[in-house]
Image (cartoon, rainbow, N blue to C red; front, top):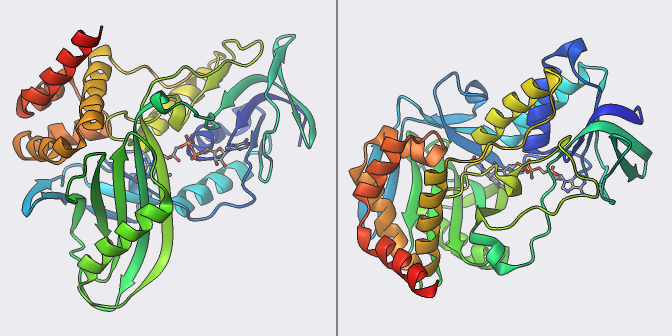
Length: 385
Ligand SMILES: Cc1cc2nc3c(=O)[nH]c(=O)nc-3n(C[C@H](O)[C@H](O)[C@H](O)COP(=O)(O)OP(=O)(O)OC[C@H]3O[C@@H](n4cnc5c(N)ncnc54)[C@H](O)[C@@H]3O)c2cc1C
């Protein structure tokens, strides 16, 4: 592995590997690159879901897809048709294998596993320098995908904590054509919670218990509720757990990333904690793919790596208002989501959730939602300032 390269990528997860795959497509024209990943090996640790037609990145590698999904609260349900842009599930192992294979074919690109970054990069004499167990690395450009250390409670508006099991039931209890996006639990003052069920066959499904709250929820607490949710779904049948997945996603970031010494335009901070996720939903996979395409184009055109594009001001304002309402009054969230899914045209809701929402989509959303909680949130802010 060379010590002096054009591009250094810190973190070989979704963002780091997505950029690397885009660059690998350039073959001999790809910049010399080192990717430092702290994990020793890739395992099937998650599934990425997104809505999209066949042209959407990774759509055709998806393990499963659904042409409709349901949202349920207090015995009422809304079924949303998404046949034009099915909801698709990509297994992480598929993505990691595609990345490792693509990188192996390009000799000047190097993925270093088991390589945690333990010191902060420094910029001097027009290059980035990083001290690592393999010696000092130097690069013209740096892309940092590592998550920052978040300490203050106010740094994130709402945390999305979830834990899930992919199970195999002894009886056919699932309906494989329809995903259950949200099945709300009884509201509690400090949180809103729902079960997310992705049926893969009549007997197999990924079942996740998810909480939106001002503070993260432990896996231990989530496990109890996940087991209850599974028991309700399998209705007495026996089941085996094939694998588990766990996530803690920030919804609405409220902090600047601290710059490195000598930080300059040749460094981009990206990933889940740097604007990759859609604030109101936590969906990040397709936003990362779009960023990776744009960033690779910038690099190959002799420009510098770019970060995630800033969301439009109105979208950020509406997302923040929505998250603040849910943070202050989580018990209202099920009714807000039900109103959104039942009253807004499905293609608009899907664009809103996934990221491609237009001004008209946002207006339709605002029109469908009850205005009271949002006006109260705005008034409370005016009264405080
Ligand atoms: C279980 C789970 C399910 C999700 N499902 C969806 C979904 O269905 N749809 C969707 O759109 N989004 C989903 N997300 C959100 C988002 O798409 C993922 O979190 C995505 O992996 C974010 O990409 P990333 O590159 O920012 O972070 P990661 O993929 O976590 O990559 C960061 C990488 O940096 C490495 N790293 C960290 N510190 C160091 C260090 N010091 N040195 C070297 N390497 C380091 C890590 O090992 C990791 O590989 C999910 C997230 C999780 C956790």
